[in-house]
Image 1 (cartoon, helix red, strand yellow):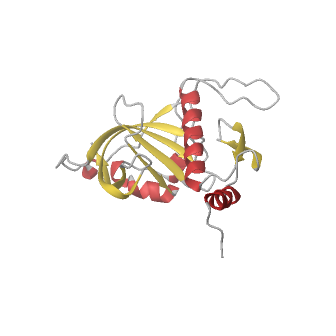
Image 2 (cartoon, helix red, strand yellow; image 1 turned 90 degrees about the horizontal axis):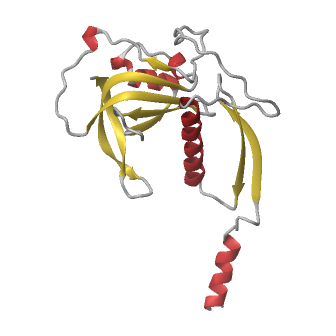
Image 3 (spheres, one colour; image 1 turned 30 degrees about the vertical axis):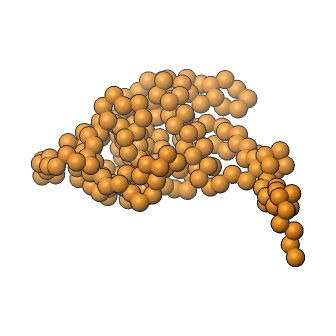
Length: 212
């Protein structure tokens, strides 16, 4: 018969749990194109996939803020080299998007303009931040005017991002090939997701994106 005393139950919990000082993995990696940051990551204990994802999202947001404030990635072993200011790049396939430049979104054709309707579950967006992931997908963060934090976010394959934004301009996969910030004018229609964040609030599922 299994001993079910409090002491036995406590020991079973301790065996299943991995304390942070008992196991850790340390690795080095890089992220970015024009600005390539060298990172060192240490994972301790048995973090959940959700905790790891949240940490990486926070790191990417921090790197965005560094670049937007005029900072540059410092190469390991030598001083960072300043990048000369240049005009916003063209969007042909051979161009790299400058991280430090805020770009204009592709122009919207007159036929793509649609009247604004019911304001419920809609948000006006003036800035789009793009950050490619190592798995080939891209983080999309949409901000209202003057907002410090994103009003709504999405993760898409580049081709899927092009399709999702097609009503707002002539987007191409190249627009999502590297970290970039775009000035935009669009309306996002959304519905509450069945999935909830750590605070118990539902995520926002994007239904449609159209010109503002």
